[in-house]
Length: 60
Image 1 (cartoon, one colour):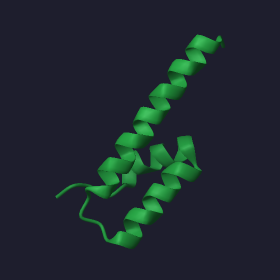
Image 2 (cartoon, helix red, strand yellow; image 1 turned 135 degrees about the vertical axis):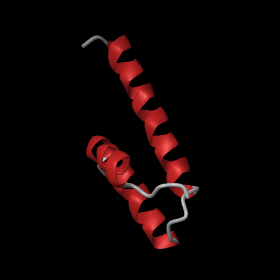
Image 3 (cartoon, one colour; image 1 turned 180 degrees about the horizontal axis):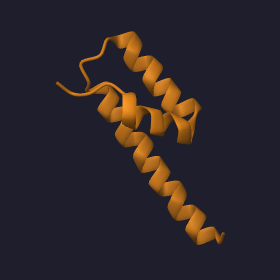
Image 4 (spheres, rainbow, N blue to C red; image 1 turned 90 degrees about the vertical axis):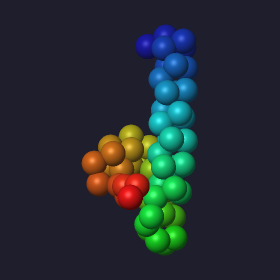
């Protein structure tokens, strides 16, 4: 993979992580749940985003 393609994928991943964190922070879940979800997304980058997309806290 060239540097340009992996750079674009890195930016896409960063944008998804930021979107997920903002979405989690705005959800009606409790503070502990929000912290755990954000940590999961940050510590397990790809898997955390996939799990969050299917099972994460939703807005009311």
